[in-house]
Image (cartoon, rainbow, N blue to C red; front, side):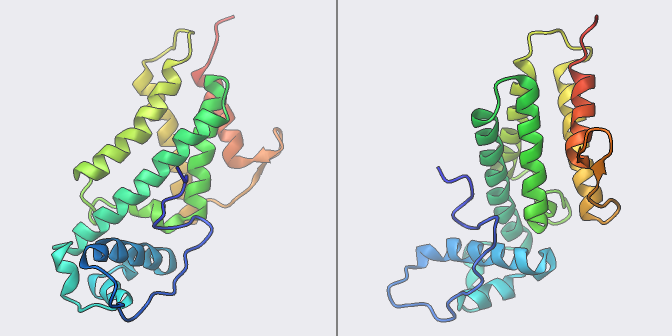
Length: 219
């Protein structure tokens, strides 16, 4: 399975959209076409640019046509968010499967995949956490969120050493660090820098600091 959804590409999205539907297009394809257009607008303009009218215009259909698939803008943004979460889940699971031999390495792979995803596609990442815009209780969104969180929990359960706190506390600590650092970078409160001792990018160095605490071994 391609690690990036067919509805987008982390290295860029082709923004050329046909303005006129061809005779061979089926109405059943419109939902996917609208979602592709929504992702393209999200990448190019941020969530503010993803409106039903703009998506319909890019798809070359009447402004009323999306109502057959999305009753509201929130419903459309929620469907887009489910796709983005699915991509993130696929990428993190692939990374920890292919790149890690130990729990520590797996957590590093998980975190670095999240960092790359967020910094490569910031508008997609930020959409995921805007509760006022998407329905996070939507079954598709909730299912993909759970896949990301379950992957993290499974990494911690692999460690045979007794943890100082329960697994969920460790998972929340890891996710809070990842999301907090990403949010501060994307909001402009932090800038990319290098750790002067580890000679690593800051986001990799703070991850090592966290792992040292989580996998503390009594001497």
